[in-house]
Length: 168
Ligand code: ATP
Ligand code: MG
Image 1 (tube, rainbow, N blue to C red):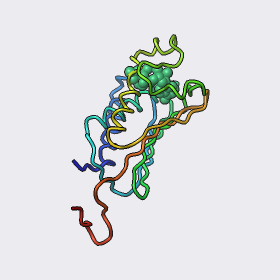
Image 2: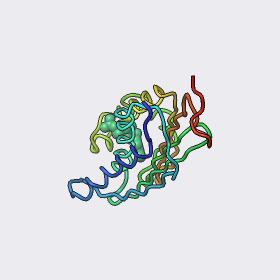
Image 3: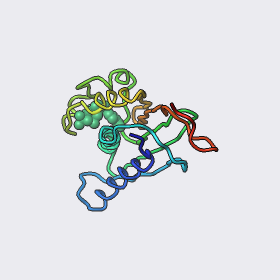
Image 4: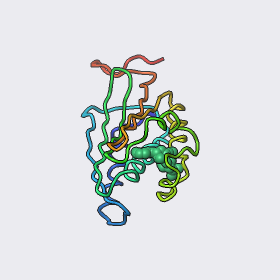
């Protein structure tokens, strides 16, 4: 099913802003949106993709100080779309980076236990993204913050200036 990806992202972020405004949050945050002005259509499982973005957002908030800034960027390339979530939180030690997407892997067990969670979010996210033919990765500097990104390929057809291409 082809879905307007930018709309989905706006919806999800609206929900985070709404929750914040309701005051029912353990921690405050500011979300900054940097989303391409172009419409982006991708063939995705909307519920699972929502689960992925939710997890990246929840992580960004959970592993940041109160009032942290979370920047969500959506860009399109020739044949893919890239979504990234950047925080200015704890960051992740270099040595942990290769393991982050493994099941139950958590940086600093003691700290993570306090924060709650199972350590499954990123493993599931990776599964979902790869199921869609994409990839997911992280850039992080300990003490400065992290950026989690995923890239999804456009599939089957292209929309050019003349309208719909033949896509048999
Ligand atoms: P849950 O299953 O509820 O998502 P979790 O958030 O601990 O639990 P993951 O989302 O898989 O599990 O993340 C794995 C670990 O990676 C986290 O425990 C945390 O140590 C580290 N991590 C993930 N995102 C960030 C982030 N934005 N900043 C710092 N550390 C992070
Ligand atoms: Mg998580």
